Amino acid sequence: MKVILFGATGMVGQGVLRECLLDPGVESVLAIGRNASGQQHHKLHEIVPDDLSNLSPIEGRLSGYDACFFCLGVSAAGMNEQAYRRVTYDLTISLAGTLARLNPGMTFIYVSGAGTDSTERGRMMWARVKGQTENALLRMPFKAAYMFRPAYIQPLHGIRTKTAWYRALYAVIAPFYPVWKLLLPNHVTTTECVGRAMIEVARRGAPKRVIESRDIGDLCGYNKPGHN
Image (tube, rainbow, N blue to C red; front, top):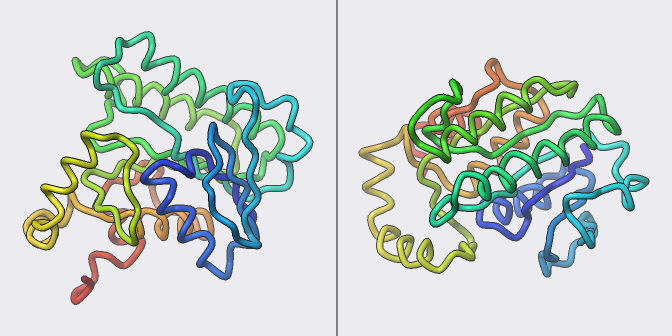
């Protein structure tokens, strides 16, 4: 399986990249983003476009891929709806449209979030925009598209978020993670689990197109008895 990964330097993207490089069934990973990951691996190839919103200069390198793991995104904190929509909806749909045209047999997996509003009419701005993005992706002519909606994600294996206040929050929460997992198993997952679940869905599909946090745990074996 050949994979395109957007957002490899973000917390979720780092976890997905790690699992792709470890999985023997993933032949290669093309990471595309505003910054290089800084990693070296024989499977990994990277492109840092001059303008991420315009992939036309690199289209010749984007064909022949089986899956796209789209982990690119920003926090809505401090952003107005127009600015948030420009990054979350406009950029995502532009990039996905290019890939759908070049790879009609591709499976596209988008990392959204718990609480996303599929009706597009709710009061929460970020949830409406995420819902609009999900719905637009599900209408695109991919072989299949899946929307991942994790809730709390525990970073593992030295992975860290780039957002300062998120790092502070994780520092406080991390010691209580085992308790959270025990008490709220449907709302807690890990970067490792998200990556493994995305690979599983790209490889074998899933019975539904919107994958909630509990489903992510089932797909990666996180919810099995005795799993730490």
